[in-house]
Image 1 (cartoon, rainbow, N blue to C red):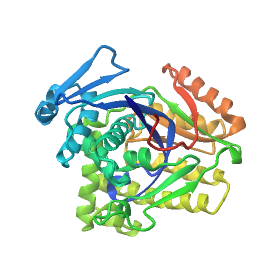
Image 2: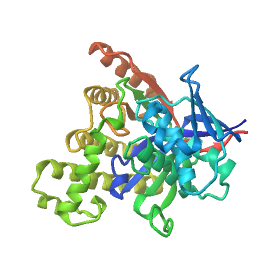
Image 3: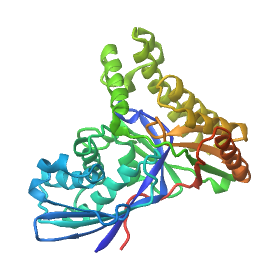
Image 4: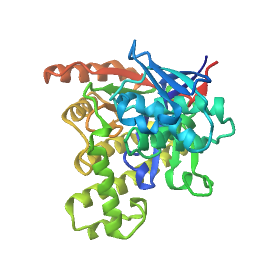
Length: 373
């Protein structure tokens, strides 16, 4: 069988803005999910995972929708992709899918989107080679939203499909998802050459997993929709800072405040990187993003705050939680020469708090989904 890979992602900045029609700035990771796939003629999907040895999920293609609640939770992501292809009229007589993931699960690095996207690009090449990148993003997101039951925006899937090596992906979500196709300027590759600036991005996986299917993520999304409705706009993308005072509900006002200010921070980071400014200049914006996620959006956790504070104390230019929050990972922008010092400080703070040692590694902007064989 041939193989395809889709990467995990880390979001430089722009958290919880995608489903509010806003702006995001992710990079793809070198860590990804590999899908080996091949067509069959038996009318069934046969699914295995290297992370679940000995477990085989086999379901008739025409029974997938009815069998959703009977398959393991992890299997709903790739099976949901098959459902979406069939729903869109692409005949699949049968397929074998063997997946193997290197993206840490529950770390806020989009392991689920990497899984969905790896399967989606495999099925595209096997059964629907004319699909556009946006259609691939839509199928992968629909699989996660509808079959897996996680109401994500398009950030994770877009990063997995559209990112390029050495760049951050500036995505205007509203422009990219326009009904008649992506509008001009919807996608821009922003140069982000860390080695040239003697910088590194550290990711600290705190080991405290999050689960976006547990309801908290959906609650935040519903609160954002309620805030937009209260202000009479289609999405929080359309809200100005001055308009926030019109929200009388203090919780909705805080949620909206994060989205409005986070969109502004994304645009500020893009402007600075696009102009060729020293990337160190964006560090304060990353830290401000964390404080907003902690205080206004209320999606941080003690382990995340501890990692951020430790990184900053050791000299990081900026640090923030990444992903949906409630657990997962922290990103820190550091001088390359300070990598060991920042790592040691985070590890020491976790040990002092009697927490399990975090997994800490460096990342650089990598390529998006592609065929390996």
